[in-house]
Image 1: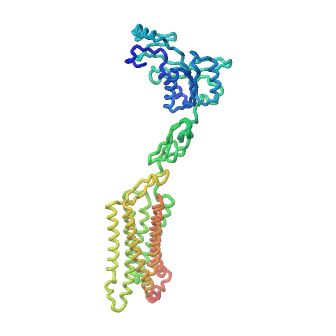
Image 2: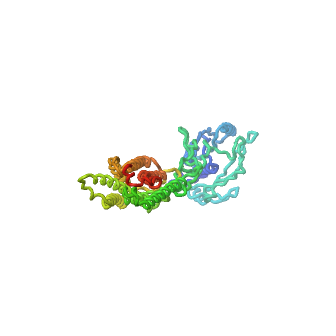
Image 3: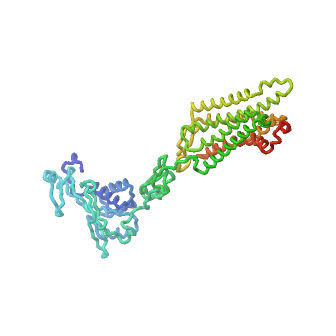
Length: 532
């Protein structure tokens, strides 16, 4: 009936149900009350008002514990309120009373007012006995506010009302609702002032609500947010997921930056691997110096000293490779890591393959009528090293031009950290490089194994056989270990494989010779070499 087009002569002198419900909603929101009981009379007008009130409470996240109706006799009797008062002490909800008096008038009288008094009511503007301005708005409603009354049950079983606040829906925003908490007299049985009418206690930041099965939405459990999620407000329904570069703090109420991690030179693991790498680098350099110093002795000359120099120099670079793997990954060192490792190792293995082929060829050339003399010499060895290394270089270049390695921020591998790592780019190319090294090692192993029992000074094949056996075992074990590792430990596994296989080659091939050169110099002669 508030539609001025359909009912142009309608004037409302009783409170609008929508305004009353909005005022009650503001009161509930002010105190944070969610668990509500409603007491009302059973007349038709009250039923409609309670329905509007119920919808408003539920839309604001509140719940109705129960709704009690009281028979309507024109006015509410004190004994009825006393009965309600004694009953609600057992409830944990805030109680709302909506009682409507019979203000209906005969239709003919209403029509008379509409026809005779419309032009006066339209311009109605006066002050009441309290000094409040009274006038009708464009919808024919009296623009008056409402008092918030504190109903007090006195010890002598009488009632007393005290005005503790006001609500005026026509006032400016922010001034429409006022309340004086100090003027409120709370019931003595409340253990908390102001009381908290809730089915469940508030969920603090760091927790979220989980509705209990079969219960209203106001009845819930508070469960902590999961790792990587937060709630920074009270009574949040869901936790918010932190951005990928952040993690939740310990109490799950704020997102903080993740810790950036990579295998660095400063951490213990990086220090140990760097120390081992530099140690073997220096050992290899010392052995190279020994071979150069004793280059004219029989044991160095008998084992193709030029190939030995190439192997030792390539092994020095192999021991230097792990230093490229340690430190913060960026575009340059991600590219250099695998390609440098693949090419340097291919040079070392192709040199060992050339040495093995030279041993076999030299023995076969000593047989009568052999035509293999022309295949003995540095030209053939250099050709083997160059061609085998060139194949690996082509593989690495194809890798770089198709899908090169690149730095990658791994935010999900480890909780609470951002792992900076080098992605292989093309996994197929990575395993092709490893596969080619395995192919060279396998060929060297087979040839050396077949030539292990050759007589005289060609017994170096035994050491090559053992070194290739160690090399193959290390890299066969590397693949499953590498795939099962995470984060910076994947890098540590590859560094360990590089160091272990390089140390195996160095120890098996060159330690027996160094032993004779340094500790048994009397055996460093052609006669003893043939007996070995």
